[in-house]
Amino acid sequence: MDTTMVILWAVLFVVFLIAEIATLNALVSVWFAVGALAAMFCAIADLKFVWQMAVFVIVSTVVLIATRPFVKKVQGKTVPTNYELDVGKQAVVIESINNVLGKGRVRLDGTDWAAVSEDGAEFFEGDIVIVKKVDGSKLVVAKN
Image 1 (cartoon, rainbow, N blue to C red):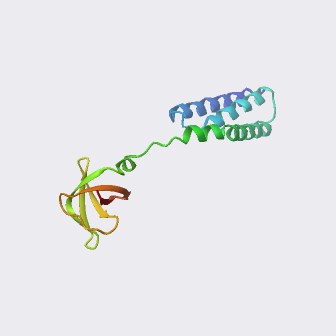
Image 2: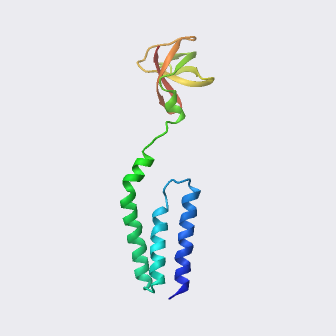
Image 3: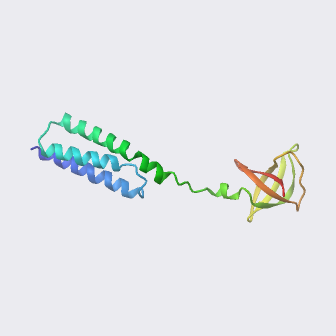
């Protein structure tokens, strides 16, 4: 038995596990940890390095494919970002909105945003508008 290879695979197993823990269960390296563990057992069985590497790749791939539905289910839960949470909220026009002149600003939750009208309508200071979408650093708004 080549203890160097056993130690190498054991170290790789630990490294992949630490990487998985460090990424807060984002499921980025757990497959490789399982593959390294399987390859370590091959090294204990005194198989040649080529077979150890083949087992590492095959086991990692099989575990990845087998756990894919679970991973999609876990990672499928999307958390809306801040800008997505702003859609549907009311904002106050603080600078008249005129798409032709390319000007307009609104205040939303205490933050000033550049704004454009969704349908080209003009809005005046003090008007209440609804955020329809976020387009880069601009809010697209419509009549309340």
